[in-house]
Amino acid sequence: MASPGAPGMPLLSPLCICPLHRHNLLLMTPETFVQKWTGATLSERAASHEHFLDLCHLLDQPTPAQSDPTGQDYCFEKPVHANGVLLTD
Image (cartoon, rainbow, N blue to C red; front, side, top):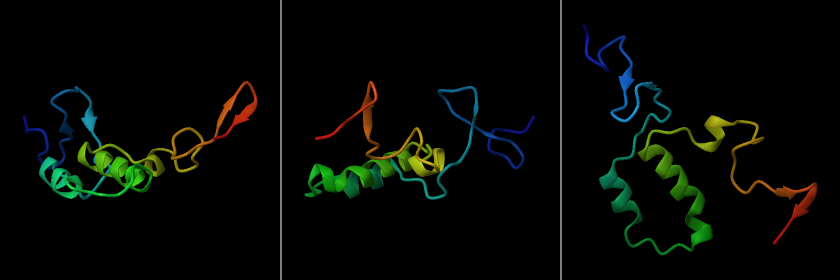
């Protein structure tokens, strides 16, 4: 039997029995993530989206736009409605 990741064989997650789908061609390593974000002086708001996208790349998970291109269920800064009333800051 061919090993996981061999040509024609899916990659397997050590924590999951399901095949991994490579969402991000350029995977971020833990080392590059730490190097990039150590000492970052951006405000939380200025860095939040890029930081989240880097986490997606680090964990090889789809970004919001990859997962939900319409933004219907998964996107940044989606308005929140409670009982039909739009909640704002």
